[in-house]
Length: 264
Ligand SMILES: NC(=O)c1ccc[n+]([C@@H]2O[C@H](COP(=O)([O-])OP(=O)(O)OC[C@H]3O[C@@H](n4cnc5c(N)ncnc54)[C@H](OP(=O)(O)O)[C@@H]3O)[C@@H](O)[C@H]2O)c1
Picture 1 (cartoon, rainbow, N blue to C red):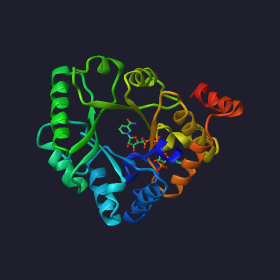
Picture 2 (cartoon, rainbow, N blue to C red):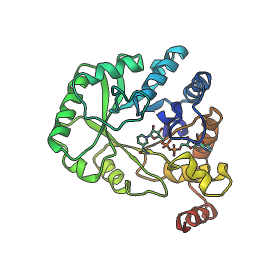
Picture 3 (cartoon, rainbow, N blue to C red):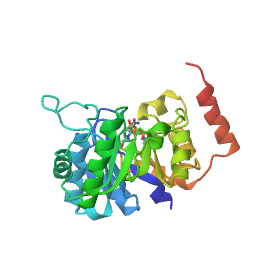
Picture 4 (cartoon, rainbow, N blue to C red):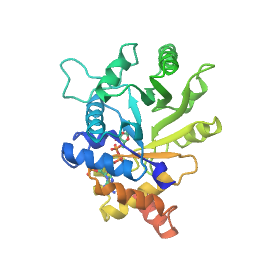
């Protein structure tokens, strides 16, 4: 139960959005193996660099079938191979490239990043549905969705999950998640710590801060799963233990409240 609540974030495989330098290939293998050994199967990949890394790791481990691979529409762009570029709406040629990067024949959860061009979004959902009918995509999710995106979903859409950053500091996605649950969708909260460096800014003991912020996100009634990036294998157990401790005590809630209301 505890392990099913946690997912591994793809930023674990890159240096750009963390404090720590990029984990070595051996450490990346150890992180993914630690997750799979403990029943954490959901692994996100946002940027194409993360797909390349995860594909190589799962191939080395020989454990592709144990993972539930999630993948977003952030693609490699000519001249920007070393950058983290923004999302691009899906086109028919994108899936083959993603599968090659991931060294697999299927994506377990394909994430469609929302935007405000409703006609284009409908086109992307139809494309995702066609990939599902071919067995190359198992499920489709909406990423960074807002409540209005759910309301505008066309009849017969393939979406069964929503993803958005949701943590004690940024609670805007609460309404989206409550609505998605009413619609029978799965809800996946991203970035329980905002970013790793936010933990440092709190000035509290970092282990305590991570414990409290992760438990806040994981115990919200409308949250099914939480994605955390972990650049060290040791954090897999630390985060699992935190989730196992359940809701915050009154004293822990008061500490969290202090961080949320602090100025500056
Ligand atoms: N937020 C978004 O907009 C967004 C969008 C698309 C996808 N995602 C997904 O959400 C995932 C998580 O996002 P995120 O990396 O931005 O934020 P996060 O998961 O809230 O923060 C991860 C950072 O927290 C630190 N950490 C993890 N476990 C720890 C522990 N037990 N003790 C102390 N520090 C710990 C690490 O920091 P350092 O390594 O930096 O020290 C790690 O990089 C991403 O990997 C991605 O898959 C997020």
